[in-house]
Length: 280
Length: 265
Image 1 (cartoon, each protein chain N blue to C red):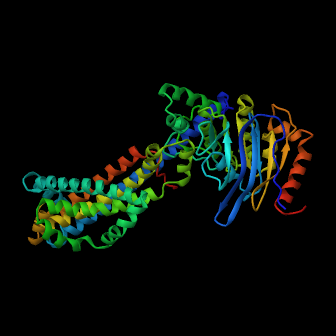
Image 2: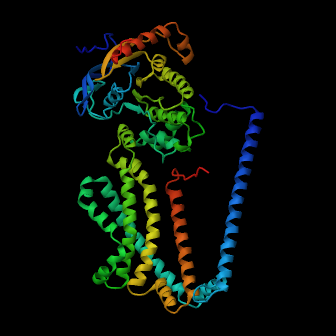
C-alpha cells in the first residue's frame, strides 16, 4: 500500500525541474515584494524629508534631523534611561496582565459557575474607557511605579482575557470526544487537547496585549508622575521641540514593531501547525 | 407493530452484545429496543439512511454515550465508558492539528502509558501498515482527506484493539480514494481479523467489506434485517463487484432499506 509509487528516472528529473521552476517563481515574487517595499520607503522618507525641509521647524522636521536628534537624545540625552525605564514598566505590566488575563480567561471559559459569577464584571470593565479609571487608580495607589504597573497591566489584561476565553470556548468538542474514546483523564485532556488548542488564542491575546500595553505605558507616564519616554514626549511638546517628539515617536514605533515580531516568532514556535499561509 | 429481530442464531462466540438499547434525544426516540450480537472476529456493517441512529449506536457501543435503556456487554462485562479493548475511527478523522502524524498515532499509546521505546516501534509499524511512511512529521492540515483517514486508522490500530469501531470512515473522502481505502482496509483486516463494527450508508461499501450486514430502519432507529454476505475472502473491491452474488444481494438490500424507511418500492 505505498502511497508514493516508485518512479523511473525520467519522472524524477521532471519533478526536479518542476520544483526548481517553483523555487524560481517564489524568489521572483519575493524580490518584487522587497523592491516595492524599498521604493515605498524611499518615496515616504523622501516626502518627509522634502516637506520637513520646507515648513516651519515647530510643525515638522526633516527625517535626517529627526535621526540626528534621536542619536543625540540616546547618547548624551535622557532617552536611553527613559527607554530602559519605560520598557521595564511595560514588560512588568505585560507579565502581570497576561498571567491574570490567561487565568481569568481559562477559568471563565472552562467553568460555567465562574463565568456566571465574574463574567459580567469583566465585560463591564472592558467596556469602560480605561483612561477614565486613572484618577481613581491614582487616588488609591498614588503616582508611582505601583500605579503605573496597575494601569499598564489593566490595559493588557482585557484583550488577553477575552482572547483566551474565546479560545477555551472554541475547543473542538469532537476532539474532546476523540480523547475520551481513547480513555483520556482530565489531566490528559488538558495536556493534549485543551491547552494546545488555546495556545494560538493566547498568542493572539498577547499580540493585542502588547499593542494595548504600549498605549497604557504612555498614558501611565503622562497621567501619573511624568516619567520615562512619556516625560520626554511631554517636555519636548511643551517646548515645541518637534524633532525630539518625532524621535521619541520613532523609538516607540520601532519598539512596537519589535515586540509584535517577537510575538509572531513565539506563535511560530508554540503553534507551528497554525500556519498563516495567505491565499495569494 | 414493531418487531425486534434477534440478530444471531448461530452458535458463534459473541465479542460484544447490545441488549434492548433505547435512546432518546429530547422527545425524539433515536434508537428503539435494539439488540445486536457482534461475533468474535467478524466484520459487521451497520447500514441505514441518515437518521437511523447508526452512529448513535456506535457511540453507545464505545461507551461514549449511555443508552436510556438497555446495556452493552463486551467480553461479558457491562461497559460504563470507553473500553480498553476498543478503538474508534471517526468520520471527520478526529486528528489533533497540533500533533504530527506520528504524534497522532502515538496518542492512544501515550495515554495507555506504553514505554517510550515501544511507542516508537508501534507507531512505525502502524504508519507503515497504512502506507504513510515518509509522512511521519507532517501535520494533518497538510495531508489529503484520504491520508488523514489513514492516520485515523493507524491511530486506532496502534494499540492493537480487539474491537474496531468505524463511524462512516470513508464518507468524507472522494469516491476514488474511498475505493482505494476500502481495498486497503480489506487487506489489513484479512490479516488481523479484529472484530469490526463499520457504520455506513453505502450498500456497495457494506457488501464489499462485511461478513454480515445489519440494515436499520428509521424513526425510530431499529434493527430491521440482517444479511449474510456470501462472498469468499480474500476479497478485493473488484472481485466483490464481479461476484455473482453481488448484484442480487445489492437489490435485495436496496428494497429492504426502502421498506425500512417507509417507502415501498
